[in-house]
Length: 152
Image 1 (cartoon, rainbow, N blue to C red):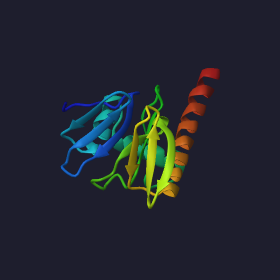
Image 2: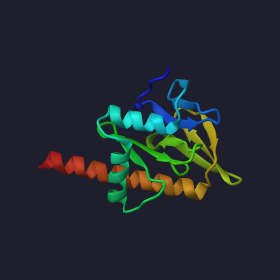
Image 3: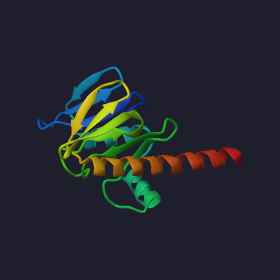
Image 4: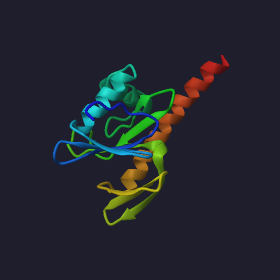
């Protein structure tokens, strides 16, 4: 599989050292020959914007400039956050709505996804909690805007 668009079943986009990316979905896993940034950028484009456009919007909405979550697609609230700077080759992206539980393991974190799959990521629990907070805040801003437009 060479083309992949993030969708409501996508749980995580995981960079591999070989330049491949592992995609974790609710019921499937794939390896594709693109890096995580390319998957994110192409998915944003598929849904009508560029990664840079989504990033600029998140910067403005959150008044923050680093390790920003992005809204990949609005109608299904596909909000993903990076585990590291998105410029780093080993950055992974996690769907905020796929997380069931998090747990500290040394200086890393274990994420239990809603399908029961557990994975360890190179991010401290405190940093992971901060990323979850930012993503939830971004999602909240999005829902408030959508809801207020529907009321008007």
